[in-house]
Image: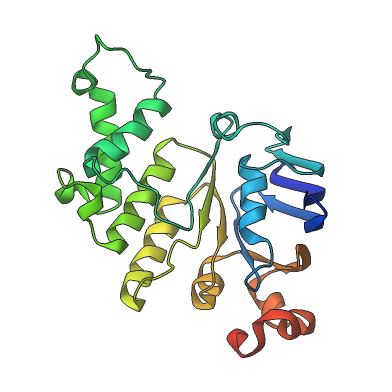
Length: 249
């Protein structure tokens, strides 16, 4: 069976400093896979390697069976992978509607043309409205994104991430900084919007990880020390010692 993401023997060095060491990771199509580990373990670097923001020093990365190592981020995105970032990444001065519409325009094959009025594209209007309804922000459509609450901005970013119709979604700490109620709402949203897609998530909140993921990989000092079901990871002595400790209980 073709894996959605396959990382084989990947190393990443910055000068003489090795950040990622012999990294091997497989994520099955349709799986919700969490990557956890202590601060400085290399989680964001791994995300940047997969999404093309940095290139591996050695090894290979495949997306749905195709080699993507060394491709640029937009090329990887066109092959069906979309990601969010730790820091909220929306266009603050554009409205909620305009933020999502930008992503939809690209996904529907529309390109910049000064003689075109984007408001005259019914399929774009419909898809934009559907996404805003999905993320419960349709009533905020005309609000500049920078004026949304922090939780709403994260929801908007998730909407932008899924707007392109990518089969593989990567979310980098989507619930960071949220209250418990906001986190529960975000998890329900993520679960619903990624149904039928592959999800890879980096998250520090263990209740989110164990409640959302089908499988979990534990990254410590740039190397995966264990992969398995939530129950297997919870009961893995190496994982408890290296990372989970009391968090896993």
